[in-house]
Length: 469
Image 1 (spheres, rainbow, N blue to C red):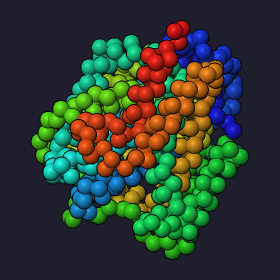
Image 2: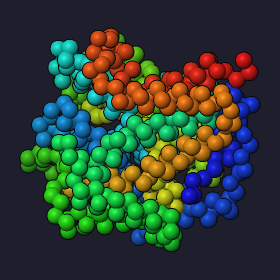
Image 3: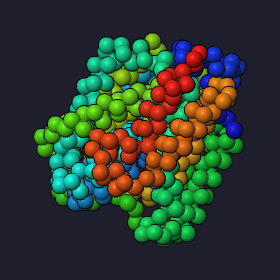
């Protein structure tokens, strides 16, 4: 496997527990050049740039499409409202990615729907509606949570707090964060790949997904430079054609808004934000998880790109992410975060150039504004989308384990890894109804395995089993 070693990737954050860190051979620039066909500052030909941008746009769209569709289903949106949420989310992901690549972290890491925000939406519904809240009131409280978290992230970034706390995120913490992020959504992806519906798995759909996974994996590992660059795009097109050839039916596309060519996001589409102390506390903890996502994404990017990120990356990236979350609240979207999985996509395709990514962000914004384009992209069969994205997610897990291998696997660290994995993954299997008797804030926190896992590994690493004690 070509999962890359991190070398010095988090040397600046290995203050606490530094005695447990192992020295790791650095990846040379020559080795990186062999891994990446296009590096950060490279400019592919115009034709290749357009094709690579289209591939990026399809990847960015595919990993974010499922979240608004699921939320629309849970909150029982009518088809037109679900489609509007898909369009708003697409626009916000494109805008956030454009802000980041131009003024934020400046590397090809897509801003995408945060799994932790997705979980909070679901848990808020499951805690609020049975208690007598209307779905609309829950959504208004989520608007407040997103706005609150966005402003908080901006202030923390401008105040230099993110730089100050980065040493808390050791290779052990970041490695666990990457693995937990993948585990949090792995069930959804596998169910989507096999066409799981009404308690049944669709055999032909599962077979189609397996073939797509095998094709993309083969091209990304064994293909020549050109095939590797377009492995995801080839997988989508082949899977789409195979899905149609087998007559596997329609896709999970949302409904349409009548008589619209252009869709403009509406300000506070769910109504005025509803202030909630429980949501504010949850948003505060959520910011901690977002910081972990940030640092994990930057670590993964440095590993795959084989170079140091620009000075001020954490501060600028944090400000841009805060703006994205603030806009998500104002435009009734879902919160975003730099997606560490993008590093896996860069490694899979061998394309680390900034220009195609920038163009892809613009394409995604247009898809979110132009209704027919949105309909075209949503016509891609959902199982095919899941299958292609699944391959990139396996790379993210690999990068997470690479982080863990940078620490000594002594009794202390094995206990931290074991406790974090067992407790956080175990919480993912506990039905939300089990927390119904707890205060709302505890329902939101304890019911989120990813959020609890990040908090737990930080406590175990720096308080309970603090190195040197």
